[in-house]
Each structure stands twice: as C-alpha cells, then as structure tokens.
Image (tube, rainbow, N blue to C red; front, side, top):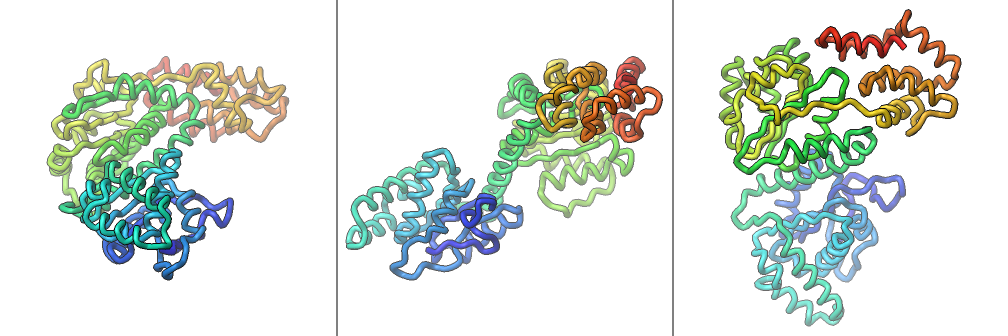
Amino acid sequence: MAYSPTTQTSPSSSSSSPPWDVFLSFHGEDTRKSFTAHLYTALKQRSLSTFRDDKELERGKYISQELLNAIENSMYAVVILSPNYAFSRWCLTELAKIMERMKKMRLIILPVFYHVDPSHVRNQKDTFAEAFDKHENDPRIVVDDLQTWRSALHKVGHISGWDLRDGDESMVIQQIVGKIHDGKLNSIVSAVSKKLVGIGSRVEEMMNSYLNIGPDDVRFVGILGMGGIGKTTLARAVYDRISSQFEARSFIANVREESTRGGLVPLQTQLLSDILMTSNIVIRDIERGSNAICQVLCRKKVLVVLDDVDQTQQLEALANRRDWFGGGSIILITTRDKDVLIKRGLAEDEIYRAKKLDDDEALQLFSWKAFENDLPLEGFVELSKQIIHYANGLPLALEVLGLFLSCRNNVDFWKSALRGLRENPKKEIVDILKISFDGLEENEQKMFLDIALV
C-alpha cells in the first residue's frame, strides 16, 4: 500500500513539521470504506493528525520511504487486523516496522481484531495460515522476512486491544479516539507540568495520599486554600494526569463566578454534556438537573472537578452524594471555605491543604516571570528576594509582580517601583490580586496586602 497524508505534509519532509499522532495500518479491501474510514473521520474531528493510505501500491512496488518515515514519526499506531491483512506483504512489512518502534519504547500500538480471532493472529491460523502458505511459495519473499512477519503477528496478537467479532464498532471507535486524545493531552500536560514550579511534588502527594481508592469506592477530595495559592492549577494538573483512567470526565471551572452570573442549571448542563459528550442537553430546573446527574452518573466511573466552590448549594446541585456516582469515581472540589467541605460530609483525611511555595520555588517562579530564567539576573538577586519575602509563597502574587517587573531590567526602576507600590499601586496588579483578596479573613487580607506594600 502507498501511504500518504490526506490533508497534511509528511513530517519527514520538514524538520519543523510535527510528528503524526496516529498511523493507521490496515488492509484496504477489508476496511478502507468501512471501519477505517469511520475511525479516520473520528480522529480528524478530535484534531488528531492521522496518516493513512489514499491508494493501493501498484503490484511490485516497494513501500515508500514516506510510509516508513510516518511510522517513525507517529505517537500511536492503530493496527486493524482483518481477515486479509496477512495476505499483503506490505501490511506485514508495516507491522514489522511498527513492532520494531514499539520495542524501542517510541510507539504505542493499539490493535483492533476486526472479525478475526486474536489467537489466529498470534499463531497464524485460519486466513493467516493461508496467507503464509501463499508467501512461502512466492519466490520474491525471503525466509528472513517470513520469520520477521510471523514474529510481528505473534507479538501484536498478545497486545490487549479491541475484539470486533461481536463488538459495537461505533463504541470501539469512540474508545480508541478517547484513549489517543487523552494520551496526547497527558503527554502535553506532562511537558507543561515540568514548567509549573512546585506542581510535580504536590501532584504526587495527592496521588499517593488522597486518590488511592478501590473499584467500588467513590472518593470526594477537597483542595483547600486561600485565593492565589494554586488550587486550580493543582486540580487541573491532577485532572490531566489521571483523566484517561475514567469512562467520562468533566472540569467545571469557576463555579462561584459562573453560578453567580448564570445560576446552577448551566453548570448542571455542562456536567452532563461533558459526561455524555453531547450538546443536546436541556435542563429545566435545578431539581430535574440533579435527578438527571444522579441517574446518568450512578453507573459510570467518572472524574469530576468542581473548581472554586463557595456554597453548599452548588455541591447539592452538582455532586450531592457519593451514590450519585459509579464505583471508582473521584470528585475533586477546590474551595477557600472548609465549612463547605465539612457540611458535605468530607472527613479531615479527604481534605488536601494547598501549600505555599517554599523560598526556592518562589524564587524560581518569580524569576521565570521576571527574567524568563530559573534565577534572577546579576544585580537583581536581593531585590528579587525582597519580593519573595513579601509575596509569602503565593503563586499568583509572584506571577503578577514578576510580569509587572519583567522587561524592566534596571535596578533603579525596580527600587523606585518597589517603593512606589505602597503609595501608588499599579492598577493591573491590584485588579489581579483582588481575585485572591475577596473572601479572605481579616488577618489573611492584612498578610496579602503586604504584597503590594513592599
């Protein structure tokens, strides 16, 4: 088969081109106009760059270098093993290359057993045996290739995949696309998380101490802390880290603000729309919305984040009881108000208290914002440490002050700006810091105001 991208240039053609998300290996006559076509469309709809064939190789042609480069530059390979797959020596050569890439930990293989028995693939029985009888009598094929192909089929037949002999094709396609989409997202998040100062250790603490549950348990976990301390960032990092482990997921951001502006029904609608992956959700009132959430989610293993909750009514409408959710579900709630969590039945060991950045982390975060570097520039170390001291480990304050002082690498300006903040605070700083100021206790407000009084 000749593989060429339908809408994009091969990654190998330019060093600046991105790698493919997905490489599709399939036998054209078996699945090109059916399963493979539907899978390809679904992948494209989720903005996953996908390499597939457009036309068959003319008989006698070798596999193109473009195809081999596409395998080299793909994150996932979906191998659709159909009854006639092994009759194509080009399909078998693709598979051998794919297995070679997997061995080097550079490619994730997702096999689909399309109306074939996985054991027939592993052991070359039925049509796979017939195919090898044909190849063994083909003078163009050498013995080494036959052994390589048999080994590749044996290995791919042992990989857990989807058996479509009795399966729902549309459901399988949905699962494949979801797995690839979530995997790509997690890889991006993993790379981004390395740039989120201090987030890695906090995510690990959450994972190890708060999120280990049995398959039949439902876990509510609160992330508690003052505004600007990084609750939402932590919740998002955890969500992105584990979301692929759940049947469905939803991240409801800014619950406090959104419920004040539009009420709770739109948030209930968003939750159900995310879980069911449809926009055709109509909820007439809060009570009916709550009933619908319970009825839909009680049989599903879901991950739900409710961000910035400040009233128990919000939880009553969105996640009132544990029996609303299926076994293995996790509900993360970020809030500034411990009473909201306690009133909904969370125990002390279900509440994670968000931690401020330590001095080293604070200096690193501030330096990234102010200097785009891990450390302050020469001559700015002591000034930076003053800001670290008064910011008191609050990420939002460090980011705002760092951005305010960035691109102004003049010591006199910094000194003047720091002195002037007390009498004439910059409007952009006040506006952003106000997000963290609202709702704090009096002693917390005093501490937070110190940030602008350096």
